[in-house]
Length: 128
Length: 93
Image (tube, rainbow over all chains, first blue to last red; front, side, top):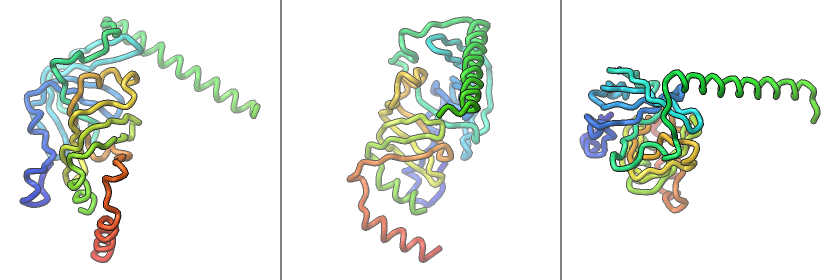
């Protein structure tokens, strides 16, 4: 992530300080991956060890294990360092099984689709 | 290079970075690089309840390509210096 000149070496936004730390990686498609950073490069490509995807639907969440992941940098939005002394999630959140979170995701998707189709019908009627 | 130099001047200041996915993060600008990737320290998310997964994140690296806005303190800018630098850059380009 460095490379504009010798005086910039000290101001480089390097991911080196995040190596071997447990991180939260936000992806462009909205996914949240957690894992330990083992490698990175100037494109923010990253290798996460012990990766899992944290799926959150309302107050329900589930961590789905993924193993060793290589993430292409163009998909990375944010890499956050998790403060181990703080709770990762608010206390109100409930851990559920993968099957249940998939059901909750589908329900949320259906509700959004329904809202979208109803809006289209209203726009068609042109009540304004 | 102009904005890279400009952000280097802002290191240590409180900024709010608004991302293209609508996430807004407030924090102290720790460092920036030639791609305008940003590292923030002491971060808090603006709408914390909407983003529960960000609760324990205190430092983060933000890829430059996903930034929509960087909101600055009103006194964080020396307008005259910025104007001069912009004119110089425009002349050179």
